[in-house]
Length: 191
Image (cartoon, rainbow, N blue to C red; front, side):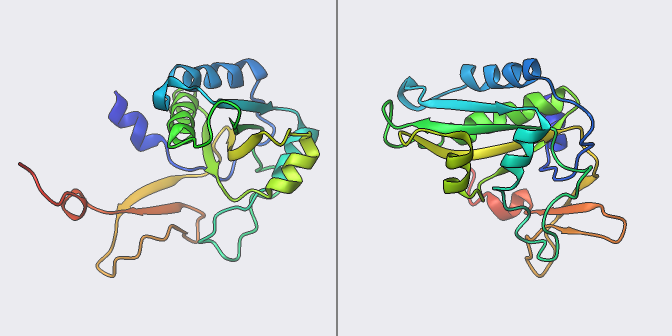
């Protein structure tokens, strides 16, 4: 059921790094993105797939992790993603990518979750470094990086408290808590 899949599809930032994700799996996930909606059907997105430790390490070095967790620099060795998908926008096909990358990323992450994997969309990317490391041509805009792997952390959804704080946090056992606003807070009218 789609509702269960969406509930399970939480941003995961710690993985079993030694659990491989094959290029075939990554291609299957990108195929879900390829089949997803695209504004004006321009289909301007393209992708870099990485599932090898040397290339994963290069990508990892360009990423910022979990801004609300100020004392956490990102997953430690052994808990890092075992694969990445870099989403790029081809500026020769479109100048503005609208929400295409979000639609593609959500399709990829839902497919990953259904396959027993988890992931995290990362927008905090050192674009110049990533571009240099992978010789990404100037006409390809770096939009998002999706980290993927077998999940090693528990993520729970809870209601936003009375104080209204939406920042995610980790408890002493390492459980990742994600506050979500209630339906009553976000629906302003029904007709």
